[in-house]
Amino acid sequence: MPLDRRGFLRAAGAAVPFAVLATQLRGEPPAAPARITRQREPENFESNFAALSGFRTPASSFYVRNHFAAPKIDLKTWRLKVEGAVERPQEFTLEGIQKLANRTMPVTLECAGNGRVFLSPPARGVNWELGAVGTAEWTGVQLPAILEQAGLKQDAVEVVLEGPDSGTPEGAPGAVAFARSIPLEKAKKPETLLAFGMNGQELPAEHGFPVRAIVPGWYGMASVKWLTRILVVDKPYRGFWQTMDYSYFDRTHGLPTVIPITTMQVKSQLARPSAGDTIAAGKPYSISGAAWAGENDIARVEVSTDGGKTWGEAELGMDNAPFCWRLWNYEWKSPERGKTKLMARATDSNGRVQPMQRNPDFRNYMIHHVVPVEVEVR
Image: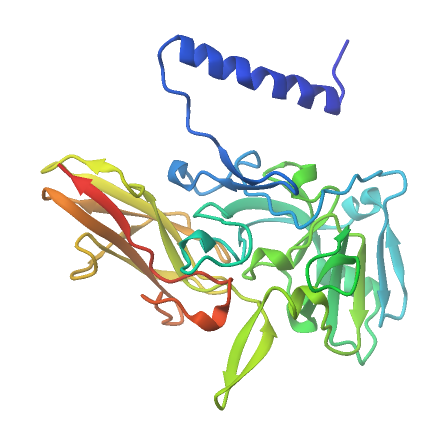
């Protein structure tokens, strides 16, 4: 009897422990996990960044960020509504969306809290290390085509993307759904998608099935999952998720003002070696990682093997696409014995350089300063 989708997942899940057990019985170390659990309720997983091996991240390794329990979607009743400051309110089924002209493009998504574990003192939120970031190929309908079909009113200024997942976070006036807005200018960009596919397959439930937003160059909180409503508004949206949360301080004439988090900062991370690794002395070692810069391209990555005293330029990978990370390698020709700190810093196409120090005005988000990786050579 053939397995349905749910039965297949149960069977696949049951096979994993046996495979691990068989490996242990053979005396082999178990393979590195594709993802690392950071929270069980709601589920939050990060990829094993040390296992970075290619430009595209498999869906099974891609990080998962949930604010509340994942909703259960019934395709028979699910609809995507487009309403608000539009001339012709719309309502779409998944089949209706899939029939429209679509586009496939790679995009890097990063959780705005990626790297939070490195903050001192400890900050509120999920303790992500390096793996709340990934690059996938997304297939979907361009959001501007949907907005054009609905007809924008002249006073429209922002587009609110809303999902069905909801709860009562600390500081909220009651239960709130997860929703974020993007300005009309970004919503009308041809790269902004309503995605129903990931890496050539149906969009997995944990990544937003049946439809999620993909907002290239912006932190992942803007790419709302399980979309149920697109609300066009005639004044800036100041919801919970862009005032009380996912916001930072911007200083105007010395006065701090809370503004929503939007575009990704320039950043580079070391994948290998990891902190605490041992490197063989006198033998060449390939230091590797990835760098990204949101709406800009990566122009250069520099690596230091002596705690920042000197820097050498890394070789950038061949895969180079807008809104995507750039893989890089640096040949450490002759490591000398002792403990040392490795560092990587990126520069983007607009001349922004990854900072050495943390900006405290970023609160518990946008962690993009250089993080040293201590290793021992012997």
